[in-house]
Length: 444
Image 1 (cartoon, helix red, strand yellow):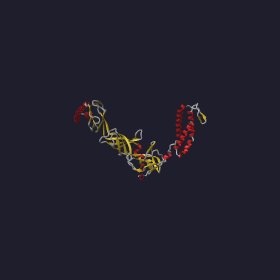
Image 2 (tube, helix red, strand yellow; image 1 turned 90 degrees about the vertical axis):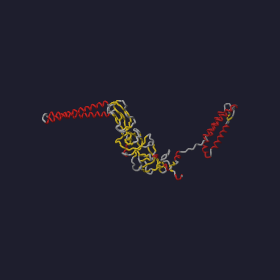
Image 3 (cartoon, helix red, strand yellow; image 1 turned 30 degrees about the vertical axis):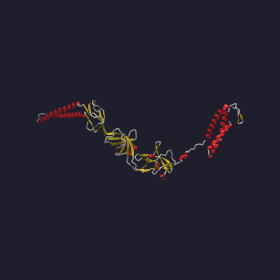
Image 4 (cartoon, one colour; image 1 turned 60 degrees about the vertical axis):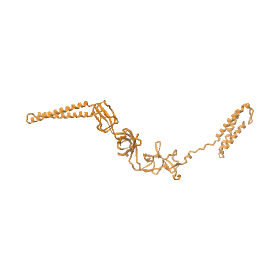
């Protein structure tokens, strides 16, 4: 048994020696020092497991009882299992550790940058634009209401129908109004007849007064009756005109040229004075209301152009002009409403549509600018990475208005003219890491 274990140990030693080169001998000597003890332990376990009590074989000077021939298959299986365990143990004890690369060595490799990955901070005159959004509404719109009460005998228009100024929208039953008007006309005729009689009496009494047939007091009474007749006629005529207006108001007409947006009543309904009939809008001129930050208001002025797009119209761009600026900030915010006039001759735009665009501010003095892609946001703070010599540096900046057309952004603080900013992605490189710019001429 011991002889077999020693043979297995010798085989493992030979195999291990052939797997390593002379440069690894120092490491192996240290590991081999622990192998004899491990192998000896394995041999003792094999001896205890494979030699049952009562055998007679002698191992290392110890008398071991003999075993029968039927125990040899069990001993062979035990030897095989222990040989596998011994080989596995020796392999893991003498295995060469995998080489590792330290983070310091990895970061020591300079970051390779192309010339297009670097941009220079330069002063430029930027056409500043201010993003804005808001909803549009017709400049001219009104809810047409009934001026007199009565039954709707006819409602002429429907939603979406165009009308011109003065067109009839609805008719209200006029029978009662016509009767009132006729009564007032009769009152006018009676007042005129009374006035004619008072005029005759006044003229006769004047002649009699001149001939001294009547007193002055009597003449003054006839003069007063004449004045009362004149007033009564004027009152009757005024009441007749009121009745005529009411009769005319029974025809509800369009106050301006536009489009019917909504009908509130139907034919046959009874309405009273001030009942809403229809809503009328004029789409030829719209008004866009947009909120602008209060700090940007000094740069906004009447007449500045606005470009915007509306969902559903694809890439079609609409234009307008600043018409009015609210004198106060919106309640609960620090924004000020700007009113933008939008011509809509083809009436393609509708009231209530949402617009997104930009207000073109006046161009000023040159300002420091860099590509927008160079600005990174770390915890919502804008920063840029610069190249100073062969080292990467991180700087916090304050940016201004961005121009999407040119891809540039204004830098108000944090950089100076002539500095080089990195526009490429630097991965997990930290400030202080090395970076070099490849020479494109040498590569070609």
